[in-house]
Length: 335
Image (cartoon, rainbow, N blue to C red):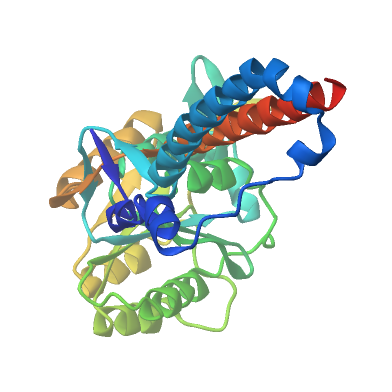
């Protein structure tokens, strides 16, 4: 449907007629009789009638141009059908480990072995796409923790920046406590206190760096109403080949499951263990169930402005009037 942003401006439509009624008429030009001989005046009567007709047509066209101009200044716009936008009111932060141990290739994707970060990017990227209505943020941590993406509804940007993350970017060690502390700080700065606060922390090791103890950080998070879901990532067995043959090892010996479980329990969350790509995918699907995506909806109507069309039409008509009058004056001067 079409509506108008400023419909009250239709009131200015009779303004030209009002001005013509209030202002005194312009005195007619009499100098033509002094210039043209008496005999020639009779010859130019047809031309005079033509000029009168041109003047009348010009007035009609001027009125039409004014109509289009008034139509334009009321700012017409086309509004499409209402679209439902799901909004959960949830502030959801993702904290992803970029320490050196994330480069261990113990995950299989389409028949090839990939490192833990690539597997995380693949599965978490799909999770991000599904979180319609959540404000998402991204924290990357290694020896230090830093905010890669502040809370935003722009899921595409969050996913892109996650995919651009590189192992070792924040250092080779693991600062789990600092990552939690940074999440608490950023969520505390949110003005909306009614939304739920959730942190999904993914790591493959133990806290080996940072200034904040993970359990102390978890207590602070609980006090701020931040629920933490922890994910321990890494296979529990893989084959290593060397000059002396093949042997099976546990690549996740450094994973501190006790601390990750305690962090989740202190904040009302849960701890998950992802040993392969399927486990990781199931965990993120379970998180969708634990933290439902849609709670309420808002209506959005796409709007497209239309004023350039009547405005352009008004300018074209005005230009034609000016051209016609200029041509008429030129012809009368030649006669």
